[in-house]
Amino acid sequence: LTKSILFFEGQRSGYLPQDQRVGWRGNSGLGDGSGRGVDLTGGYYDAGDNVKFNFPMAFTTTMLAWSVVEFGELMPPTQLTHSLVAIKWATDYLLKTIAHRS
Image (cartoon, rainbow, N blue to C red; front, side, top):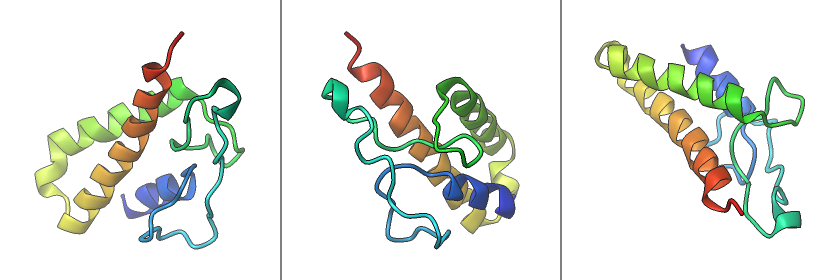
């Protein structure tokens, strides 16, 4: 679980938080959506290729959230916190993608 959550952190796009544990990842994709006048920063890249695919991201986030619902009480507190942050990172982005539909 620890390595899986670190993988999520390594695939983050956008303005990264101060507590980012993957040191080689910097802020990225800061202009995402700017061509259409919307803020689409955030979310996760798909396997390190600097592309964000929403359906795989939504599926993966759903599976992670479901795992937390089912097994969260069995997770060490630190891992539970990192898992919840990973879920929020994705859902914040996914909500941005539907908030500005025209």
